[in-house]
Length: 446
Image 1 (spheres, rainbow, N blue to C red):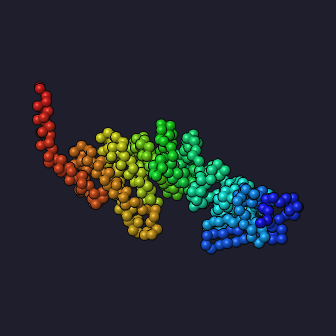
Image 2 (tube, rainbow, N blue to C red; image 1 turned 180 degrees about the vertical axis):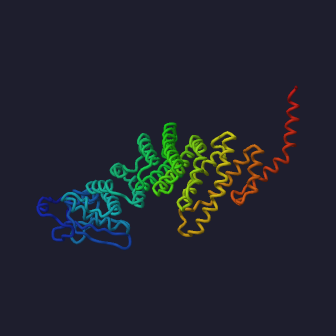
Image 3 (cartoon, one colour; image 1 turned 60 degrees about the vertical axis):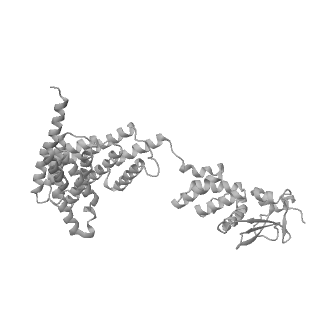
């Protein structure tokens, strides 16, 4: 058997650059093969393999128990899976390239670099490992690539940890900082060209606060709630200022830019309701909307009827629905007078507006996306009105139901449930209350 390649002095070979596959001066055959299908020989040079790969250094050392001879050369067999075959070939070739320096431009994408990294770890090639890690740490990953990296890299130990730097949890102070910046931008009124950016900011804020498979990104502590309330307050102040301006000069409603600005504020208010509801801090917003309700309805009534006005009415109803729901289900407690006022303002508005929106949708057909409102929202709004009405004193209920039964828009909202409950309560009221009175007399010694 010939002596192993590691005993040869490479000095003479180093004078002339060696090339993989150069049979004339190679002293090692690397045989890369899979279990069944692929088997390829590569004529290599021991001094390169030994210097760049601990795996090959061990295989070509005197301590390795056996060394196969193939084509009068030492032979090292490397087994791999079919899916990894090309990566093994690539790493073997890179052992020659890396002798001359950088291989940053040799990876041809994240997938190839990741495959090569796994082989480089297996063959213990530190320079290639470092180059792969530097590349993967520096480049952009597609979502599928990121998932693959998460499967593979954590098993590779400290040498591959820099790749995961972008995925590490961040400090609470960093989260708070980006939350504050985002909420301020999301509740601002930037130029229309930035509306898509603002919408994206709003979506990410919702995502931060939503509990899904993972916990919310940050806890809703007092500092968070205070900042959100302040931002919502400033947003409502801008809305109120525009409302006052429209009341003073209704011709402004014919200005396309003003209408778009008003609609944008309404959209922002609707979004703000969702955030405030998540954080359970709707009270200030509900009170502000309640106080402004008369002015809002007055502006809409006095405006000239246009398609833009119908869209504006729809956005108004979307916000009003969220406010009424907070009141109707006890999330925000208001006095009887204020609750009655909200029913008297918004019930007539909604019942007149819904047929207009339905008509606009039917007329414009496929182009009616701006006028479409989630059917569940109409149903939810109807249920909210029933809850609000049934929480009022019975006399006020009777007045509302009397007006409803004589109204041409009796179909929506359908207050049949409220009417049935009122009838039952009214019929049994004397019997119920007489029992209470008798019990009271039994308890009261006087």
